[in-house]
Image 1 (cartoon, rainbow, N blue to C red):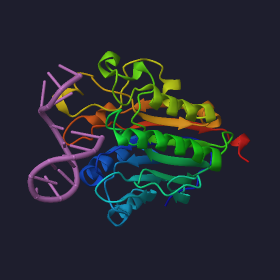
Image 2 (image 1 turned 90 degrees about the vertical axis):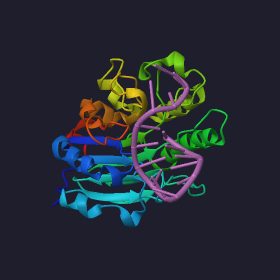
Image 3 (image 1 turned 45 degrees about the vertical axis):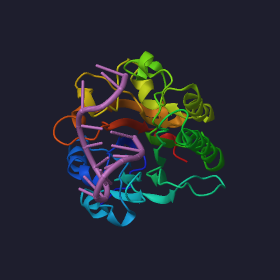
Length: 272
DNA sequence: ATGGTCGCGCAGCGA
């Protein structure tokens, strides 16, 4: 049964699985050895009725899924309790047209799993959708959250925060994922109070979380760091360890993203 | 770093 551990070390993971149906065995295998307490999944590509909640329950995880079927779809798994789930933005706007954001309280953390739109090309309508999505995510934080709370926003942001997060920055000039507007949207999240927790613990370059399936890019180390764990200052200050698990990108039938996690050792003395 | 690959679903699009 899930235990309601509200303090102490917590391992928070995020993974764009590129179809949970195609990836379920690999996800089960990874959970078995990585032992995350909270897992944020993106691109499940499942309807809610097809989400394998019983499989995760058997592994000791409660779960919430927000899906639409063929595309998108986000989930949160937790073995430290899961409550107050909410799908979508927290502003007063219309519901998003796609299933890209879900929230839950896990232990004493407020957790969001997010799949930011790809953008496709800087002159594409989808790029405007991406920028609007980032703006509404920031508005959701302003509307429904406080930077003094313990909050993590984890997921596939489809943005490389800095040139160090791209294998060849010169090759991506003019492309999505690196544009000033996208990075400004991300910067507004950090201005609100979110810290790139992984990067704080791992300042070295050439750490990527996504590699194109094509051309052997993974084995040539040609990737981008676009999957992020963003945390409020209380969470960031408590982070002790972070890792991108390249092992999970190897072998038969991997996602094009690797999972990554951050360990956070929350101080029981400051529990409200 | 163009795509040479995936997943979805059964053609061709999206990532």
